[in-house]
Length: 337
Image (cartoon, rainbow, N blue to C red; front, side, top):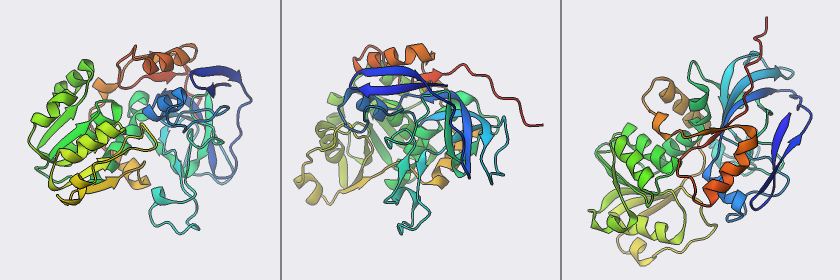
């Protein structure tokens, strides 16, 4: 199989590797589509330090079950699926919520856990979620949508709330969709790129430039989907007294915040990371039921030999799509007889 191997900032190579064999409780998927995540991009440039040379990235993916390991009875050959890449321990660390596991490993993010930028990938069978007729492209986009749904619930968005989302990339656009799903009354996306503002407006949301945010009335909930000092400060200062700022983006490992503007108005800060397994599966259910529409957010699809150039174009600001995907071009395997 082919695998896209990260060599360091702004460097990849495509490597031929043996097909991985699923162990007990695992399945091998033949990869269909893989999305470039913002965290992959920040890792690729070296900004975040969250990717290391020698690893294979990719945690937003869809594919078909190609082989099953010993004891697996929940998956069948040829089944179209996505997977939850967050793999918690068996509970022995004491976690009560799976994404709070102290031993949490994330496929394509934890350096030694091969990701989906490859023709095939082995994942735990209990992470696999059938697509039930959902397109393979939407299946690969379920992961960022799950991040957004988790964030909206962490922030406690209620019916009628006013919501500001800072950053109109894939996660920011998905947060807007999730906030509307949860009943928010007024949703605005702040984004410097005109194309991304247009995407938000086409979906029925308000959209402003970062400079225009201060003209808005204070909001109940603000989401920072970027993760730098300027956006963190803006999220906090945009709130009503007692409002909630939810930090989603990880553009930098550390930021500074205006502490006075947190303490005196009694504003609340929450972090959100990944999702619970229940939220991931609920996200797929919402997509299958068409309660959410991802079609406008999905950009160009690249072949294997074009994906490294797509990373570089995104890093240099040459492309504005909120989601670029790799398509392996593989056909589905023959179903088991």
